[in-house]
Image (cartoon, rainbow, N blue to C red; front, top):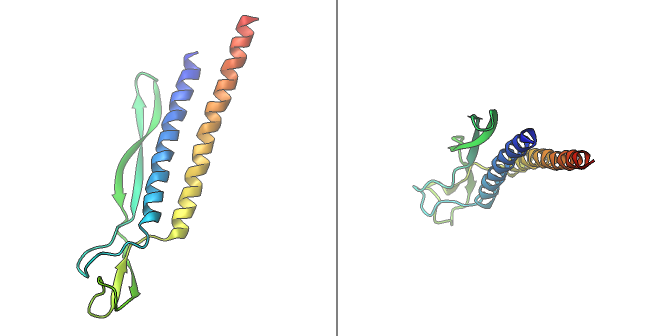
Length: 137
């Protein structure tokens, strides 16, 4: 029974990690058009979740853990909007370094990884149920 418990707990850490990843992607998308209020103020900077392998002595297994959020240090995009309060002397406004296509691909990958972990939970529950049926025999 401990093997079932171990696989459930490892899958749960995967579910947690992908949930955190999807939350960061959603935050990035929500702020994709958030310019600063003044020309000197930086706009929102894209965030990227990090993960690390973590050994769990209780499980005697390695599981995934959510690490710190990293900032994407790529250049901000600019748009010519001379009437905007955040426009510089040349009329350009800096916008976040977020590409909605990349965020959509990252979201799809996170969704598929989440579904894979969910399938592990589902199959483990089925196997546990079948084991109990055999033991009841």
